[in-house]
Image (cartoon, rainbow, N blue to C red; front, side):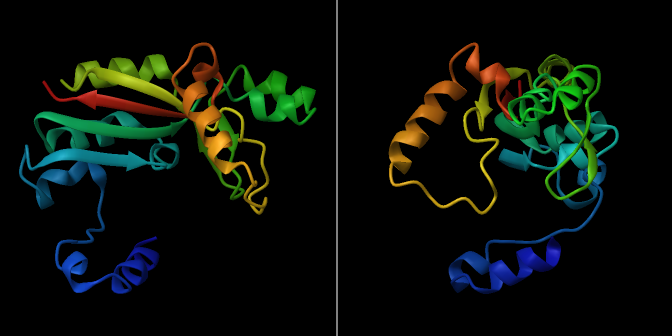
Length: 183
């Protein structure tokens, strides 16, 4: 991923390249690279599923936030793991998914999902309580990775955005987007 990021960064204009610093390391050790309160926004999207114990990483990210700063997490929804196999007609897989947060992702890797209640408690415990949360990929989770872009993309995006902020749909989304704000 670092190599891919370096390659993408190299293709950017100098004004962008000079403002970006790529750092490889353990997210729990953010204090080695950044002073507490260094950032107004910290994004952690598509990472927690690969971390066995996410709380120390989330706490490290929150330490980097300035007062009032936003911590944005995008995670696999552990409360909706039965949806994908169920919609695909894999009834045994759907039943098994109710009792676990472990799953095999589209890359073929065994990873884990996070539950909204657990992350809400984690955010509260690190002084960055949950401010808002959204569902992501409510209707499109079963779309093939190589599916063509539909002609009515704007309508699809509007439906996803509306479902992602509306109960009960957002709770059934494949992914959760949580926003915690540093006190």
